[in-house]
Amino acid sequence: MTAFQVGRAETRTTSIAASPEHVLGYLADARHLPEWAPGFAPAVEHDHDDVWRVPADDGPRLVAVKVAREHGVVDFVSAEAPNLGLFTRVVPNLTGAELIFSLFFPEDTDAAAVDAQMAVVDEELRAVRERVEA
Image (cartoon, rainbow, N blue to C red; front, side):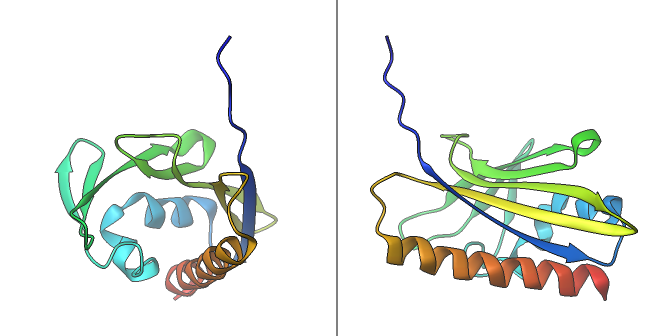
């Protein structure tokens, strides 16, 4: 039997005064990544299909942007390990949208490291909200 490692999930949300379709459209366009996630993606370049190249000090990362519009899904995952990344959902929130970001951490991840990463996520959510509502 295969052993499974279950990670620690952290989720943050923000309410956005825009339609779910508008929020989803913004997120699904990977060219917007540097606008709302500059720490992760200071720039992006299309590689192939749904894969984008993101520069990094240790060499470029390949990020797959998985979109399922009918389910309100836009996931930004490692092209090599699609179980690693940022998992997002956009759902209706009365007359606007709720944007949900979830990350997973290995169970033994230092709490301070998780807190620091989630502070970045809070800023990313704020940035998406500001840009979509503008």
